[in-house]
Image (cartoon, rainbow, N blue to C red):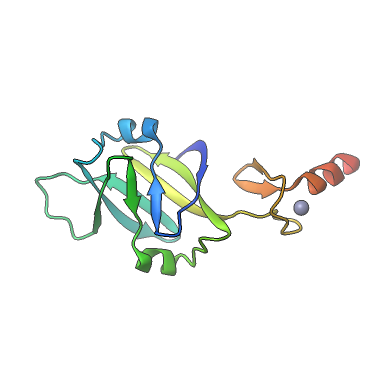
Length: 134
Ligand SMILES: [Zn+2]
């Protein structure tokens, strides 16, 4: 799996914008194609739906702005909190893999001045503290 370094939240309506370059990469045409979604463990896989195939996965249309609605059942299963979580986007061949991350510092829980490091968020104050122990 390859890290895209991209983090995106789900909005209050459960909508998630797939970045344009990633939509292009997996061959999605906006407002025409659909995406099928399935969970493997805590990873949410999204793949372009082959129009010819009958999918047993959850399928959602991609709107004109490149958004998909992530079903409530999936968000509930992942314990995704729209006020404090976001998705880290990875790529696995022709699939986009969404991994839930808390939008808060892994050390102190602060939600301000965050920077991502190896898929985890660290706030400014903790980064300063880390410098002093190096
Ligand atoms: Zn912190």
